[in-house]
Amino acid sequence: MSKRALLVGINQFQGRPEWLLRGCVNDSHAMSQLLKEYYAFQGDEIYTILDSDANAQNIRDGLSWLLSDYSGDGKDVRLFHIASHGTQVAANAEDDDEDDKLDEVIVPYDHDWNNPFTDDLLRETFAPIPDGVNFTFLADCCHSGSINKDLFPAEMDVRPRRVDPPGEMLARIQALNDARFSAEAQWIESAYNQALEGLSFSERRGKERGLKEQLKALFYKEKKKMVEGERHVLLAACEDVQTAADAFIDGSYRGAFTWSLGKAISEANGNLTYGDLHEQSMQALKAGGYSQNPQLVCADERRGLRFLSPLG
Image (tube, rainbow, N blue to C red; front, side, top):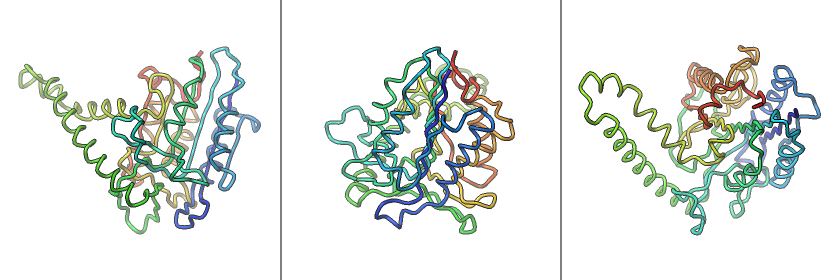
């Protein structure tokens, strides 16, 4: 058995003082402590990259370290946690794997709009992971280029973990998002009507409760391809049209999502499943007044697997 974790936290961005965040480095330190305290990670099993060290090349090198030297016994565990900004870019015209022609992007210290760190690059990096490895990706950042922003009361002291693309690209992204949301609504309505077709009134009442939310989740599962849902686990801070909050919580600046994960883990003494972690994270965020809905993308059987436990 082998365990490794790559933790990336970026508050400062090269030449972009207006992008400053305040809780990302704290998130990396907090996640390191959780891994040591509840999941028996040793210091040399955790690689942390912060601020100016977290440039695109160093993140790639960190991922190379993370996704190597497996024991091959079906008991390998790997975790990638990133706290930073996220955004979207309009995909290249020849990039036909994107139904909505948008690429999700994580923002390194030296972010370059002309050479972004896209979900395509992440998929290529994650694809060779052997089947017996439990790989978990925790993303505490937004993945949206939409101009629709969540609004928080001023007293919450919140900054969004998202940067807006340049003007021309932002307009193109907004048009693509509008088209995608229209397609989503039509797909859900059609699937909803098909699921209830031919049922009696009482049967419809019994089945329709929660059906649209289930269909929406299925739609997003089919659309979101940052990791292969049948092989790995993605826990993301919010839906791709929402804001991941960087906020002052319990006496320090934190990412609301990473804070909610830590709260759930500590309250359960580390003994909880991926499904439990997702649900308790969602409840903590709601109780704290945060409108973001964390997303869990994985095969159904992984939901019942203990967080960061080996598959074998």
